[in-house]
Image (cartoon, rainbow, N blue to C red):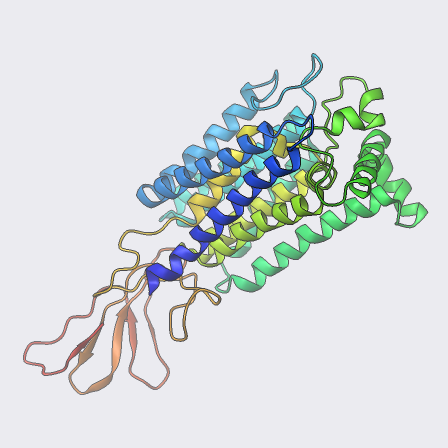
Length: 411
């Protein structure tokens, strides 16, 4: 039963990513559209997720630290533009936002590794690495990216004290929804004049005009959209902009303009699939919530920029999701061990809540109706508590049945 529950997010991921790829072909059929970019993004997410699952199972701490270092080096070294986009001018449009998104993912990977590490020294070093990625974002000229990376670090520190993941995941999903709604309201000019002027000054007038063109295209083609990668040819603002990359600099608005309401729904489904996978993840709750915070920060950057148009960013998002949802060794073992990961929506009554990590072996003891369980807390450090009035002991090792005892072993 545990393996069946654990496979549900994988099945959902296959369905969602397959639907994204198929719909890009449907929306491009009969038009001069180019669905290759969407197909490449779907492939990058799938490949990154698979790599994260494998590396997270084998070396959870080392894999997270390596991913953070790779993101930092790639963002800092690639000053002439990140690979994965085809700019129409000499200067790579959106490079700063893409580098900031990559550094936010790197900060999330470093904090996930810190949450999974044992010992104060490794945790401190990894969190300093996350702080360094925030400083790198500021050095690259992205104050927003620096703030997002610092937010991920603060969320990671707060997550170390949390044991319930569902309320936090719901809150993060609502934050992402609010940001998408705000960008759409700005494009529609539905906000009060004072708020609109203030946001337009920060977002730049050119970006707001691009958003307005995306909304107009979405209204003209509500179902199928105008076709993948066709915004640059149909947007008057993009045609008149100097060194335009043909993107509206907002992933939800780009989906609405190029793939219609179905494309927006599939983009939301991809985000919800990742959140569902994190909810059902067998990893510790601090690791899960840290990854969720980083991916939500990426969603925030993508709602006001074109970060998802760069292959390293989409692959990094899949990699981080895979690291945070990797199955621990022995997951689903039918005898002698019960790995957690069966969350509120994925488990059955009586299963451990997400955030505990390790195996559990229960044995009856002479003269006691309770059980003794070996369990590790969310930080990976063993601890011992006693159940109220039951004689139940939760220790740091496996409790063995005393010699000569006739008590039966219960798994």
